[in-house]
Image 1 (cartoon, helix red, strand yellow):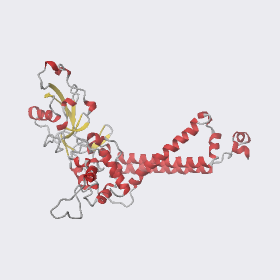
Image 2 (cartoon, one colour):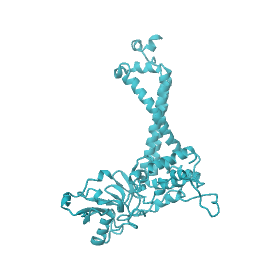
Image 3 (cartoon, chains in turn purple, orange):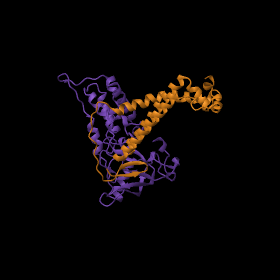
Image 4 (cartoon, helix red, strand yellow):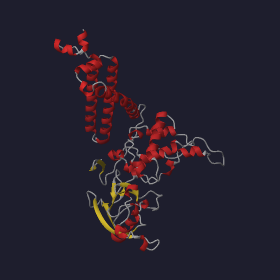
Length: 261
Length: 158
């Protein structure tokens, strides 16, 4: 994001001294949205909207203003709107981001902001894609605890802080698909498991309370598994939770070569 | 699966459904060994290629020294025959595997994919056989006349 921080609209007053303390800058921002209506269109088209926005607004707020005040037919997903549910991943100025975590002041608003659906998954309408293939590959890695022993009666399964630390990073995934839909290998034919599925496999492969790491390593030791990763790092750049995804994939590759986590 | 092209990447056309293929567990996984081969051969090739470039282009008289006699002189030494055989096999298979990966990624039509993979395999095998044949049966005096033989030390000795 750092390279996108070109500041704010120059007309919006750089003279901070004449502004009230805590005053919020207001400006007109142009948002160009890639629209698609499956009932009337063959191909998506770009449509631009001018919106009155504030420097405290996020891309999601601008989309809300478009939907509520200008064009109610605009379709996009959002649930919590606070970066937890992972519903509103979209391609903002060519990068996969959560609309609810992307502040206008971090974008160059002297230029239009381009917003489109994430790529590689079938487009359903406007910014909504069919997530079924994404969740299909997620389910295939058995993303749940598979333990053969019962914990001590009335107790929880104990785990040391060091053992928990090994897979801490990959517990943060919110399944927004920003990583998988930024992966050029996934774009080619959609058969690659994708970064998100491997991240969630990693979370259980390296969990010492789980007994079926071998099953998951076998699943990912596949033509469409970890070996299709070309370490492009698009996924790591796209992840709104800052997960070191490429590193996690490399750790799974090493585990497969070792034959154990 | 219908596709549209955006720039150089293929993404599903709007509204199309697609399914993931069923996974087939296999005992021998080519992709894993191909991945390991690319890394192992890459490390060896870095040494072999830079050694080759240094000996041919930098050491001695530099680039001007390269002619038939220079190559014949190198191949009189079994060390350089082994070096060049290794270079040939490692680099050709490394490159062919890279092209195979590209075809697997971007050739989505099964018939086209088979044809392209077949051509890569054919070219690789042909080049390996021809190259190895030259390296192992090389005779600098073959077909040399009295005049040209004088320029080649190995023939002059005979």
